[in-house]
Length: 338
Image 1 (cartoon, helix red, strand yellow):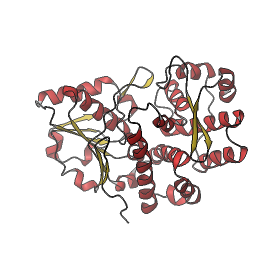
Image 2 (tube, helix red, strand yellow):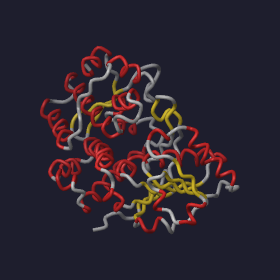
Image 3 (cartoon, helix red, strand yellow):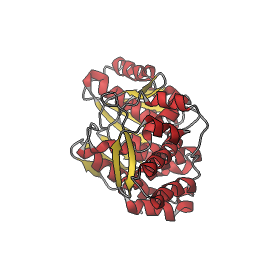
């Protein structure tokens, strides 16, 4: 059953629509951006006007954005021109970032091809690239005018990539959708088997939840910060492992477990809710312990974008569909990470 309808988010002027993968080759744009994994979805005509980048986080740097901007200049694009990005979170982030910079902003549409990009990266308008060892340190807020969802892309997605996006779906469920949480808890094997109806329902629930948050707080000055549950810990893990050894989803899952442990030790949640969080992460076989330097992790957290007035902010669970944003004593952080 096709449950994805056209959704319009008025404040960000974004529209979510559904399409089939075959339709991607028929989409019209002035410039296309893909990587070597997703260029197969472009027609020969589209490839002639495409920037094809290497896949993965290692390509998420400013030099890639310069390639996109350089091609836009070569084709004499203007502010009314459309750049279409086809790929996972890295391609979506970089395409929208380049569009936000080009002539102070041209049109951009995105076709996310991974679960992570469908439920998170392509929705909400955060763009950016990594800088050195720092995650998403350069970026803008620039929502795509249209996000085209093709759930069928997920049928051939490698399992590691599927689980990468699933961690963000679990995060959304914990923060604001108890029905999604129950679905993830009760239909684990069917979701891992990528039952089409369940996966499509999961995607649309995540998009609706995140879309509502972004509508209220585009620039993360308030409630949108809750979407970073587990990310202060997780981004640090990604950073010290060079963005390759541990995927974003694996890091976020680990980070949510650490955030839950902090909340339990502070008395923000009881043991039964802590156990529920750990149980769902373990049900999807996320690794919740790594043997890395505590000092390195804490140093990496010192460059987190959520720092305000020199103080680290952590998003912790505070109960089902509840969260809190707080500082943590370094002694507690070391205990949690040790």
